[in-house]
Image (cartoon, rainbow, N blue to C red; front, side, top):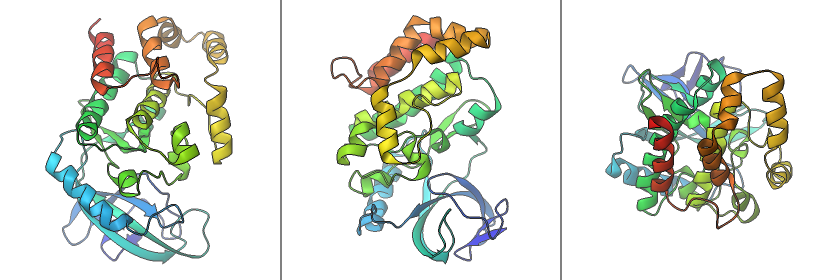
Length: 291
């Protein structure tokens, strides 16, 4: 059991276990005696001085928007503790975000547990896009989309966490271990986050949901990540492995021209090929469900 700020109890985390950034932890709010989710953001040189103040403004705006597709923020706190984050052996400072609790699993867990069909993956992606559509319409973005911040209940209703974090940091993605796996090229090169960053991340998430592997593999450092993205998706290798394993569902996915067209547009870096609005992606994904 691990206690945060003498209020939030993480029953599934040992006291000496290091915490990870930018993933959701189930916890118990001792004061209210209710379940919540916690997300941690470590204070590093990538985090702006005014991050906390900005994040309060961002969460107020998100609360005002009141989207059914966004996980609601209850409060933001600050803490300092030794060894809180993985790989650190010195005093850490950081922030935690407290979210409402919903009975659900993350998309990351769902991908690990079962094979998601194109239709189920499209249903999830559409709801994520509806949350993005509202934010993009208000001049905001997510900036760090990943399967770990997408919650799905038994009825396949979706809620997305993490809105406001990158925007509060002036568009700078903090490059935590989990964020690095879904970051886009211009976030890496010039610290620019925009709606295209969200669509590129969504393309990787959709790819992983169906094929159960990451579009550009795993990376531990920024240079390696950019190199893998520049190299592109190895469609030949994926096609070979799917046919080698005689996975009929995945063979069918590779042969689904409309699905593959959507994937390739989301992952494209060509201005003339990629999507420019969430509504267009929603329309194309809807055709996969009702086709």
